[in-house]
Amino acid sequence: MLLGALSEWIRGAASDISMVAAVASWPELLTHPEFPVDVVLLDLDLKDNLPISLKISTLKTAGVKTVLMSTYSEPNVVREALAAGALGYLVKSEDAEMIVEAIRSASNGESYISAELDLALNAAEVGGVPKLSAQERRVMALYGGGEPVKAVAYQLGISEETAKSYLKRIREKYRVAGYDVGTKVALRKRAIQDGILLQTDDAGPSGF
Image (cartoon, rainbow, N blue to C red; front, side, top):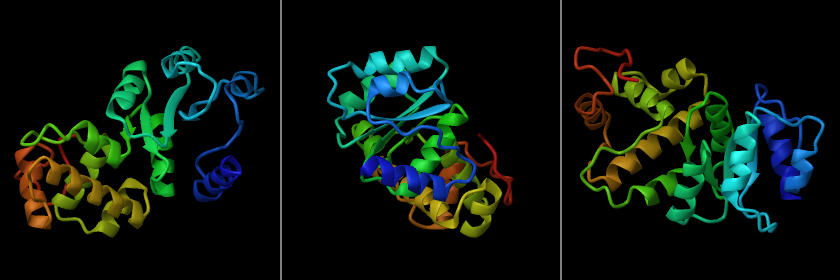
């Protein structure tokens, strides 16, 4: 039921993503006539006792990029998956629109980790510079450079709500690291200090 609902949602929400297979088990994926595909959204919670590292390496060998979904947010599990070659990792409570963004990022060879999991991974790095994804850096550069959220969304080809979600993620990552970027001025200052935005820029992004 959940598989069907998610499949239909992605089909309706992302015209640029072609959903070619929706299967409930690992063997069904490998034997599907459309396999290999560009990106697989893989449920980590399948009860088949196969190591996730084996699944990811199998997909990687076939030229398939992997985004994982799970109810777990244990940092060690996330690190193992990323070390094995997964490009994305989402918890199932993630906003549905961010699932589409994770698929797009993986398709472009970029990593995408759920904000909740990313914070868990970097919780010990207080005082350090947060690790931002390529898309988060783009959003921070444009917004910090003076663009309104609507313009940021337009330039990056995402919805305004997705752009707002990225800003929320960015601010939360900096908050955990010990920096307050709650205002646009503070965010711009931080973007300059971290090399995401050049001080001479009025509105143009740089540093990514």
